[in-house]
Image 1 (tube, one colour):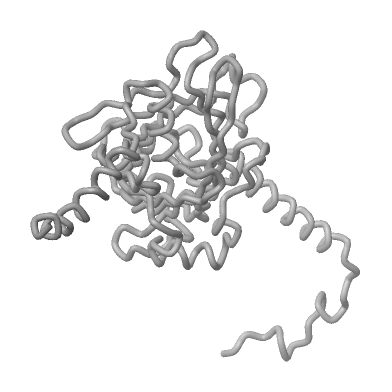
Image 2 (cartoon, helix red, strand yellow):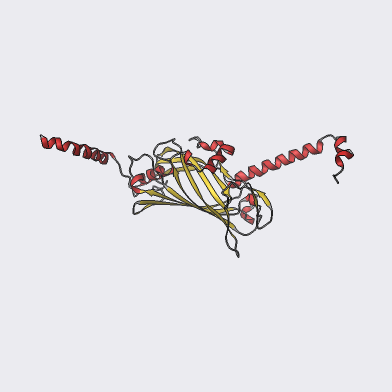
Length: 324
C-alpha cells in the first residue's frame, strides 16, 4: 500500500504524457495528404477563416549592366490572409487562400517611408507608389493534380527543419502595354522565390494548433513603373526575410502607422469567397496614374471654361508691383 501511494505522483506525470502521445498525430511530409496539411498550417493555420499575418523586411537593389549594384531602398512588407478548405472529386482535399498585402519603400538611412524619390539615372524627382495590392489570392491547392500525381510542392527535412521552396516565374502581357506585345515585346517578366522554414516537431504535430514559420523572399523584376525609367536597361532585386506573426499587433510600428493612415482595410483579409481578379503593382499603377490624369484633365477643363475675372486678368498696381 505504501509503495502504491509513493507511485501516485510518478503516475500523475507519466499518464498525461502517454495520453498526449496517443492523441497526437505526426504529419508525414512524404504522404500527399499530410504534405497538404503541413502547407496549410504554415500558410494560414489549421482552422479555416482565422486571419494570419506575415511580415518581412530587407533591401531593394538596382542591377544595371556595367555599373555596381545600388541599394535604392529598404523594404517593409506585410500580408494578411485566411484559408478555407475545399474538396474536389478528382484532386481530393485542398485549400484556397485569400489575402491582401503591402510593401513600403523606406529610406535606407532614416527608415522613413519614401514619398518622393530623386532618380539618380534621369535626374527626375518622382512620386513613389507604395505596394498595396488587394487582393492577392491563390488558386486552390489540392492534394493531387488532375492526372493523379501529388500536387503539393516538395517539402524536405534538414535536421529539425522542414523546408519548402516556391519558385514562381512570371511572364505575361503588361497591363501598361498595348495589344502587340507578342510582336514587339514589353511583356512583364519577373521571378519570385519564396523559401519557407518550419520547425519540424511543431508543424508536424497536429496537437499544436498554431505554428510560426520563417520565410525568405527574393524577387527579380523590371523597374517599377513609377520610377519613370522608360526603356533604360536594368532590373530590381528584392531580398527580404520575415516570419508569420502571432497577431497583427506584432507588425512594426512604421507599418501599423501607414495602415492606420492610408490602408485601414488591411487590418483584415478579404472574404473567403472573394473572387476578384488579383491586383499587381502594374494594374495598381495603371489605376493610380489614370486617376491622376483624369483629375488633371478635369482641372484643366474647369480653368479653360471659367469666366474671365477682370480683377484677376488686370490686377491693380498695389498687388502687381514687386517689392523693391
